[in-house]
Every structure is written in structure tokens, then in C-alpha cells.
Length: 152
Image 1 (cartoon, one colour):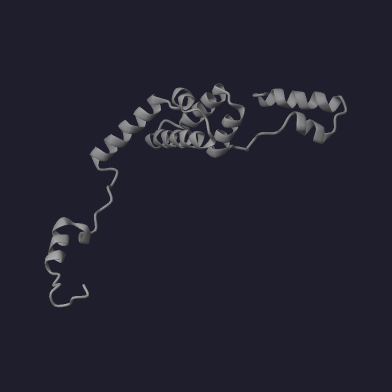
Image 2 (cartoon, rainbow, N blue to C red):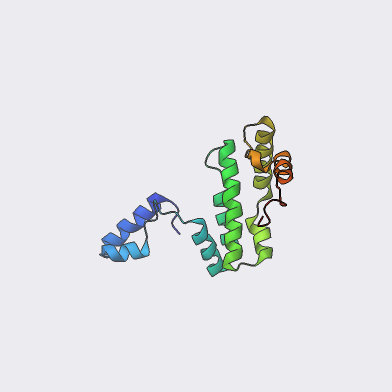
């Protein structure tokens, strides 16, 4: 659990001085740079360890937006809800998920942002095709002549 890259480097150098081979050093001090776990892998790991602190730490890692823009906050909330779904599929206790994986302040902030954008018209609602409108449907029903062709 070496979090600092300098500490990891110092340990590797000390193992080199003790004549450890490169594959042995890699096994003892793995290089985790650039390797990110997917949300599904995180959930499976939490289910395997059955540790609530792992759930909480992974949820915090997913919930912290990379920058404080509106899009990053909404994306963080989406990742967090996906993490909760994956935890349920992995078989984690729902009470633990509600306590440690759901962060209501992130969800609340995301909902406020989405509501404001919807009110300002920045989020476009999908347009209903004309043939699905009520008036168009009624007109099409009235124009059906079932007496002329009995197969209809």
C-alpha cells in the first residue's frame, strides 16, 4: 500500500540492493500507474473483500469530479449510480450500499444542475414525431374505412 511514487521508488531501489530480481520486485511492488479499474471491476473487488471501507473509498473516488464544471459533477453522479447498480449485481448487502456507496450530496448537486439546465432550455427534450401526436392519431383512426375492406 505505497501511495507515494517516491516511496515506491525507494522500496524498489532497496530491493535491488538486496539482489532481488526484477520479476520479484514487480511482484512485491507492482506498478499501478495508468491502470484504472472499471466500475464493474471495482464492484466485484468490493464484493470479494466484503469490506465497507473499500466500498466507501471507491465511491468517493468515483464521486469526486475531475474539475468543478457542471458536466463533471453530473458525470460523477452517473458513475456513482452505476457503481451502486454493479454492487447490487455483485451481491453486496443493500444496506451497506445505501450507507457507504450512495452519497446524497453529489446526487443532489447533479439534480440541481440538470433541473437548471432543463429550465434554461440547454437540455433539449426529444421531439415527438408528428405521427405520434394525439390529433394525428385521431385523424388516422377516423380515416380508416373498415366496411370497404374486411381484411383490415
